[in-house]
Length: 585
Image (cartoon, rainbow, N blue to C red; front, side):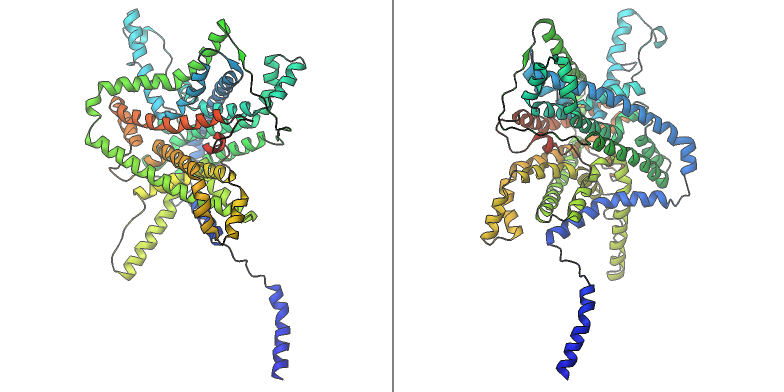
C-alpha cells in the first residue's frame, strides 16, 4: 500500500512538474554580463525616472515656453551645419588620398586624422584668441589699415553659431574621413574599372558607384561627429551658442533644478535616438560582398601641375584649420606663459587626469572582456541584447549621463550609510556621490563601447578550433580565456585601453558635472581658466592633452593603411578598433 500510495502520489505530481518550467541555469559569464548591462543602463533609467517624477513640480510648461524652443532650434542648426561640412571635407579628402597621387599625398594620408587629437573646446579657445577683437588677426588689421575701433570696419564674429559650426566641423571631420577612407580602400577595384569601361568619367564613377557603396560608412562617420557635437559643452558655451547641452548645465547648476535638467536631457536622448535610427536607416538593405578572393593593388591616378597643387591644398587646408592653427596658438601661449605652467598645481592636475583615465581604461577593458566572452559562450538572444545594450552609453552625451548616474550612486550611498548606522552606529555619509569614483563610473559607462569594439575585433581573429582544443584538454571556460584567449588578445586589449584612456582624458562635460569640490583634471582646469579669460595660462595642459591624444590617432591610421583588402591584415581592423562605428545596440 505504501508503495502504491507513493506511485499514485508520484503520478499525480507529474503533470504539475511538467507544467512547471524551471529557469535554466545561467552560466557565470552570462550572469556577469547581465549584471554589467544592468549597471550600464541604470543611469538612463534613473534619468527617465527623474524626469517623470520631478519633485520640484512639472517644469515642462516653463521649459516649452522659454528654454526648449530656442535651444532645440540652435542645436538643430548647429548639427545641420556641422554635418554638411564634415561630410564634404571628410569624403572629398578621403577620395583624393585614396584614388589620386599628388605631391605630399603620403603625408596628408597620415595628417588628415590628427585634428581628432584636439578636443573641440581647445580648438574653440584658440580660435577665440585668434579671431576675437583683441586677437591676432583683428589687431594686425587695425595696425595695417589704421582703424581705431570696431566701428571702423566689419569683421565676422567668432562668438556666433557660424563660428561654432566652423570650429567644430574642422575638429570633427576626421570621423567621416576615417570611415570613408576605410570604405574606399575596401571597394573592389574591378567594380570601379567596370564603371570606367562602361564610359563613365571619374566624376561619374565617384558619384554613381563609389559614393553609394560608401553611404553606410559616411552615415556612421557623420553620426559619430554629430554625437560629439551634441555632447560638446565647452566650445558652444564660450561661443555663446545656447544648445541643449548648455541648457542642461545651466538648469542643473545655475538654477538648481535637477528635475528640469533631466527633462531637457530627455529631449537630448530623442536627438540621440534619431541619430541612431538615421544611421541604421541609411544602411537599410546595404550589403556588399566581394565575390572573388583575387585582388589587385589600387592604381592611383597621378595628378601633376595645377591639378596636383589644388589636390594638395584641398588636403592641407583641413589639417591647417583643425590642427595646425590651434597648435601654433597653444605653443606660442605655452612659451610665453611657461613660468605659470610648471607649477605644483599642474602636476596635481596631471596626476588626477592620469589616475582617473587609467582606472577607467583598466575597468573598461575588464568589463569589455566579460561582455564579449559571455556573448561568445552564450548565444541566446537575451545575452546578445544585454551585451549590446551595455554599450549604449557611448551614444549618451556626458551631461545626460552625469545626471543619470547620480541617482544609483546616491541610492547605494544611502544603503551603505543605513547599514553602517544600524550595525556600527556611525554614519558613512556619501562615499561615491561627489567623488572620483563617480567620474570613473561615468567614463566606463560612456566609453565601454570603445573597449568592446576593440576586444570584439580581437576575438574575431581567434579560431574557434582553439576553444575546442582547450576544452578537449580539460580546460574550463575561464581557464580557456586565461590560458588561450588573453595571450592572443594582448594587442587588442592594449588598443582598447589606450583608446579609453585618451577619450577619458579629453572628456569634459561629465567631469565638469561630477567632480568633487577643489578637484580638477587637465580638461576642467583649462575650462576654468578660459572662463576667466586666462586661457593662455592653460596652454601647457592643453598641449599635454593634444600630445597624448596623438598616440592612438597615429596607431589607428597605421592599421587603416595596412588593412587594404587583399593585403596581409594586422591584428585588428581600424574601423572596429575605433569602437565607434556602430555604438547602438
